[in-house]
Length: 233
Image (cartoon, rainbow, N blue to C red; front, side):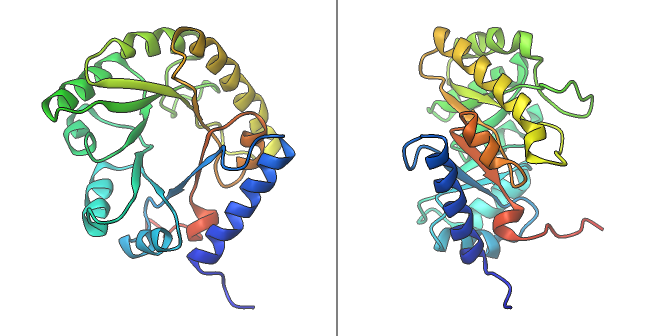
């Protein structure tokens, strides 16, 4: 059997998302698919866009810069920055990424705001929440997430759109459900203070259907679209 192309895998993921939306009683198109092209070539990203992907995700500032340049301004692509963002990389990301998923501290948000004001734009961001207490994972603790979001919303040049989380890698998709349910509960609290901050970025290749059942508005899918990631050596 021939190996699926990027276009074929993208179509399969979209079918799975549509089925998950239907199973959860949600309207078609209520979930944004972010095709995570990190570590893959610009050619692979172009192939995905040609097949209809409208949102691409990167987790390194340099990759975001290089791939957005390779695709050029003529393509209708929304770039998402989903990795840990160092303050000294803010100037590379702001203005290129439509949405930064990984704000977890006020100082970073301030730097984003300064750069956005300099560029005369408003940078949309999500607050990254660490729900599993993993030392290696970035994110604000759940008890501080809503307060941080409110503080960040007061920064000129920054617009808070919602929350994001990365749970532990699941052995079974159901392992992720408690984390996604907790983030959805936090989202309800946040929307009491910031009604427009309704985005929930959660769910990846192994568990995105569970995330959709728990209310994800964005899922970040890489390997199910692009195939196994290239070895870093």
